Picture 1 (cartoon, helix red, strand yellow):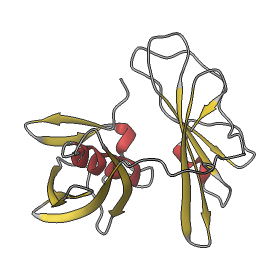
Picture 2 (cartoon, helix red, strand yellow):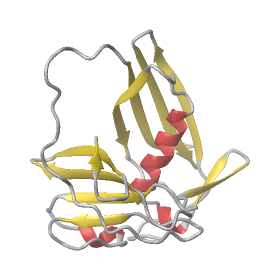
Picture 3 (tube, rainbow, N blue to C red):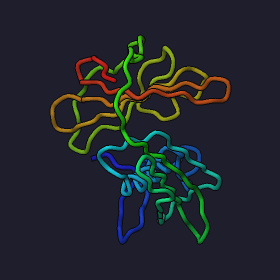
Length: 198
């Protein structure tokens, strides 16, 4: 299985996939945000709630050395749960994040908005026993396994194989773009046959 971290005695160590492409002594933001999200998922309120917002602050470099992650429930209400998490190294907070869960309610009457654009999916491939790394696409460029392939201002897409060992990749899919300093993203799932599901 492809993993960004391994865990031992309550601390996390980065695999090569989580190490920054610019410095082997630091971690990339992708892995850091994933580790914070994983920690906050352990305090999820469960069925009846959905994550509505995730915010991360990476204000110090997270080093390529063992990591301690902690979290706390800041608000635990009937309709809202807010959880904060932080990464600590060398006795100082290196990064922190917050997630807000909202209670699921009845769908209001009327038409539900659906995306009209079909996002591209890579061709299904063979999975290795360890799993496949994510694939990246930038604008009209081809899919690539290199993180740095999207260092431009084009719209970005990421396809993450969802299962291993089935002879073909079923991709989880995320697309986003940077627009006037804001990052807009949409998450969709591919079914491995080129169809997109909301």
